Image (cartoon, rainbow, N blue to C red; front, side):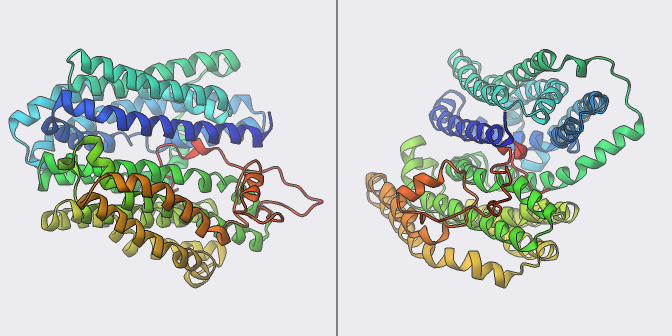
Length: 537
């Protein structure tokens, strides 16, 4: 199977998994609230973010392992691959122990950090301990999933991803219906992942049994070398975790469980759609790296600009949807009392745009060689985000926490990230504005204002007009962005469709396309390479 076909399959399954996650999240959350209660659910979300921080205990080893396996596979070095499996296994066992210790320590400190009552803590603590134990058990078998990623077993991994998401929903609904409460959330989060890891082990035994034999205990030097390889991804992931997994915890401590739940539910649609919008531009990163290897800076910069354009087009569509549709959506979904307000919603839409812009800066600069620097900037962004969210959350509640995402990008991610992007590409802010940001802003500004107006009308008058206006706004946005489509890194199968719809001129070509006598077989990167969405290193 060709690399392009494998990548296409991976991207397709990536979108399917996002679709299943979005659909299940919309359908299941009201049932969760009815069975668990808003207050325990808010405490669960806040304490769960502490567990999410502890889950980074592998120091990026499991994130970088697929790339190391792929490199060894490309050299047909089975001994090296076998050593990587053993090293990854040892690192995962050590990470499981460290994760459990960190989780227990943070959960012990959680009441003091959040100000919850002893009764509220007692409600969630035993299910959280179940979650910690189950997650720790998953660490060792995650190694086999990482190895299969490196072997590009994309069809199996895609099917397993869909199956895991479906099992999560089924298990959650059945256990909630049986009256298991928060234990249902813990079981649904861990048991499907454990089963997927075991299935990955069985699959690896079937297709590459030699990698599971003849293991030797890795030396401290080898373990350290692999860990160093993962540090760049880990620092970027830590920064992203501080941005994405702190808001509910902060609101729990400064405003209580009800505000934490309202914020989480109001942000849900934008969060999922934003990460879906990153799938396509991120899919061009391996192709970008290959073009850099050719040494042609001009063509490399064309791809960088195209990735920025595609990120802006996608995130702009998401922001319009959040502004126009989210107030009505949340009211119909879980009730108007759990909508965090128009100001918070507008700032969440602004956060989609700012975080997406920062993401585009980070991933392009990282791909072109500035991994360590971008990882450091990502951590600084996370620190600024947390401090701003704490201070503004105390002053303005959910709106203040939503504003922190914009502040972190404006103060840190964009200016510092652009410095390193300029170093590796020569592109500065002025050139990027002229070629990507400016043309997009000129076309998106009016539509964003229209989306804001539609959302206000839906919240203050009736929830139904936005349901009618949203598809019309989507078509207008798609049409308005036509001048930005030529040159985008789009899949070859998509391009004829866009030409037929008159969204692309017939002679439009991809920036990845080489001269006629030098066709390069690159189209998409493995969308699963950025699983978990740190994507900063």
